[in-house]
Image 1 (tube, rainbow, N blue to C red):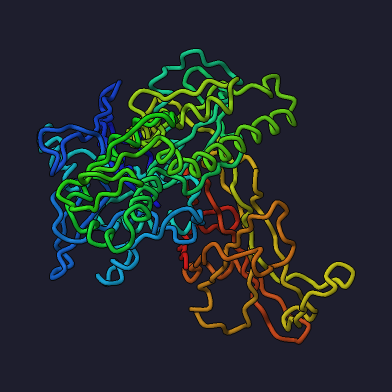
Image 2 (image 1 turned 45 degrees about the vertical axis):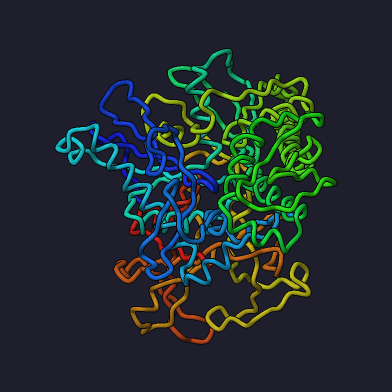
Length: 576
């Protein structure tokens, strides 16, 4: 990713994209003004006459033409593909209470991978957003502005999923891209809205970003108030797939259980079923506050359901009881409460270990995202944490996309450090020592004339505080026999990760796993920098010493190549 300074030019257009599981949005700001206006796109195809900052993340392809599709709130005539974002991180663990989706089957039938579908949707929403911006700004000025893009990603995503997101955005014509963690963006917007009200240095808060697909937790401490608000991340962010899309899937499963498989297969094809799903999504789900005595009426117009007095179905209407709705919510509530509890406890433990004067205090739990607007979720968290105020900031639904834009504007709050969510290191051959390495496989090294063993060296540790834009050096060296071919100077090194509490000392299946393959091309390097020696076998070798430099950014890492502390090129990263 390019490391251009966002503030090099006065005339810049910052465009933030929140590619969500259920809803997506775009916001923007021009940086020339001393106080740039944050503007959300509110007009969407299919929602004419109705303004909202997000549009459904759904797409539907013409079965006869894979390049032809409808998206968002447009009228769809073919099978809908939803939740495509979740397929960008297939390794993310799914709770057992989530009913199976048919999205994978639909993609298989279409013959399109998730990356391409995501790119189609992102391209469509971006093209529409630009048409709305062009309608409000003189074209000559717009064309003069340098465009910068910020795309939000879940904090719990793998590095591979973040890389896939960047590829999808680039395929859609969005470049250069900065990635930002969704809860980090939400925190920046939340503090922008609060305008430092009642905040003091040393205050800690937890942000819960409850969206459609994932729930992300992140925590910060205020480290400075002037000249600008500065925050540091406190403990590794946590999260899981406990978003509100799961509620929709569980409601659908509840309907299936209610009417039986035979009726359900016919019902699912009707407009009445679509209307019932919308009613649950927009009315029942948002209105529910946990009262089991409340009644809700779900209508399936023209569905021809059989009356079933025992199950409260009459005239194509299901009288849902509060208990029915609570049963749909309950597994998610349990998961979200557990995630928040873990984050709160980790913050207290860390600050107590540092003898922090406010170690036992959490200023607030900020609840953002579409699911974060749920009154029932707020009530559950407030009941669990009576001593901490649970706050749902104004306009919490668009907090992420607006925060993404704010992250690139001057004079806004900044995050000075983040916390490593996993260990990162490399495996290298080191001299075998019987007392230390007994039981490990050893191999004979011809250039060094000794036995060696594959051993891990960890450079980033889980829970470690990482300064933003901090550079971490991974030293390497290779021994090449005299007369080597030029292409032998293209080196491939594997970045390894580990998520156990204590990192493994040796590579181990199931404990350490590849993060990505880094390719460094040293063919253009002055060969006088190589060290020439004669090995124990009498052959001449050239030792090539080089460093892979990793720079820590909001959501991802940037890789560079250095020799003798001098940057000599970039490094390609491939995530398999």
